[in-house]
Image 1 (cartoon, rainbow, N blue to C red):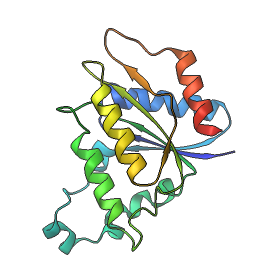
Image 2: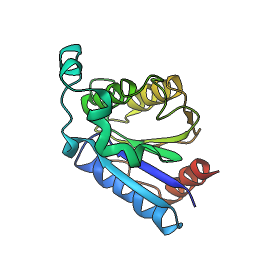
Image 3: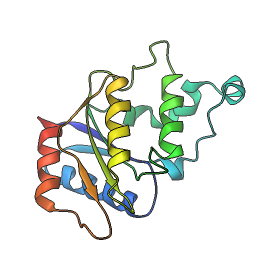
Length: 164
């Protein structure tokens, strides 16, 4: 049994997609934590804010979820990149310990998006950023849109690659 952390970088349709991942992974018998970064309402990371609040304090509520073996990141494309809440979360995580990659290094990740367009820029950005922080991002990804619904077989395959 693996512990998987599903991170929702937005609410609405991406949170629904994150919950779909959670339900599917739980149906396979795995322990799943869901982080809704919008609901978490972390303060905006800045040097000034970091002087008031340490990274360790900021991510304390997520400590158990961050100890997961695997991650799924679900986020829409915002202006060709990642959502501000997802970037903010990564910034706080990277300042929470001496080893800035500690929460992600060596772990497997899957990426997914529900975007107004095809969301490919967001997927490219996630793949680059998560690889940079030491994660192994599985080859298959999920990108859905209003005109392109989720294929259950694709969801199952991405989860299978994640869990391998």
